[in-house]
Image (cartoon, rainbow, N blue to C red; front, side):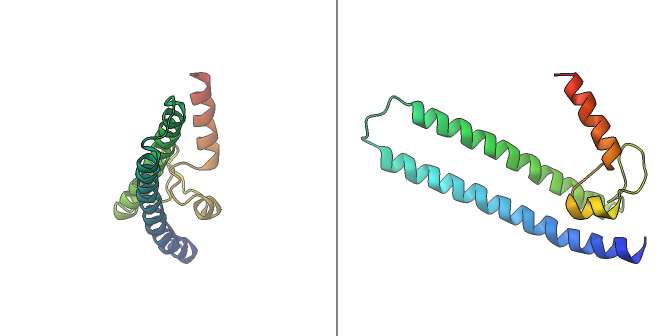
Length: 123
């Protein structure tokens, strides 16, 4: 592994840890805010629409955050397995520019774009 890739790997480990911590903190803070808002709303006349909308929004945000955490955990496992930065589809090195931009990338850009096209065809 080149010195540049090693530097990026070390930097990305820090980024992945920091991102995991940030998302976990956001999720905890979001849950605390939701509980406080519900507590404040007790006794207030409401048809339930606002709360249902808020819960749908919270569920979507939590799903996205959980997905990101899963991607980060997968990247950390790839680091431990010494396969981080290798495209899961074609087996080539993922360019360092892409890893800087997207530290938990599992595919090089061409393979990722191809995967997205296939995914959109199923919709």
